[in-house]
Image (spheres, rainbow, N blue to C red):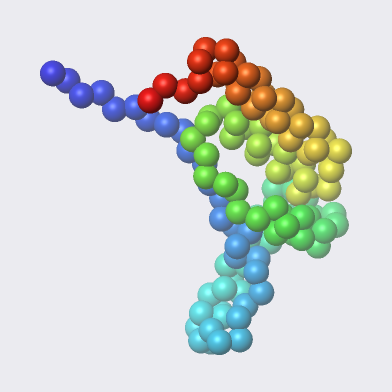
Length: 120
């Protein structure tokens, strides 16, 4: 008998945690590495979203927090679009995208309820 393994597309992003302020109790070497990582993240945000109003974009990116772990592939694409819109400062498109995802979730839950719920 042959075993088949499924490959699930996953996506996660923890860059926003590198934008936190350094802690007083850290060793100097750790502070230096943290500053270098933070500068790299800010440079990446600038390259991805543009240099205009970079402070606002960095703050928006930080406010989003870490990207939650998800294995639902269609969800990842839409969620990433909403996060990028928010980081850019395009709040209305971000809210619209999140609303769309909420509707998709509602439809999926409704369809699940029609077929008798989840089977274990």
